[in-house]
Image (cartoon, rainbow, N blue to C red; front, side, top):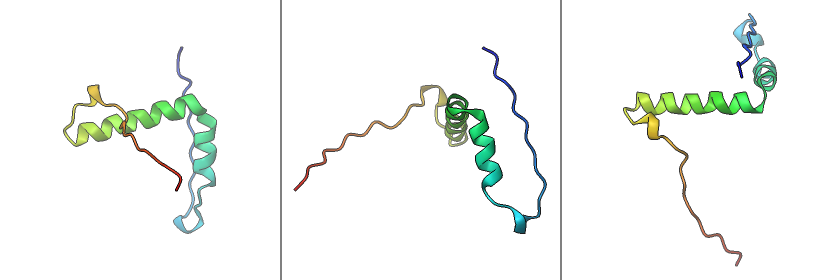
Length: 68
């Protein structure tokens, strides 16, 4: 499946900027594409830190929470 390219741009003064545009952009991508982009950013972060991004995976910690 070919990924549809989304191009959006906006020019505003910094004093007039807010998060509305960013929210609209990420919502337009959809859940699957947002996850894919986030995963790519995490892999890039690991590469920058000199880690092996091929074996990159989510942290798997276990906690035991008990009600007292």
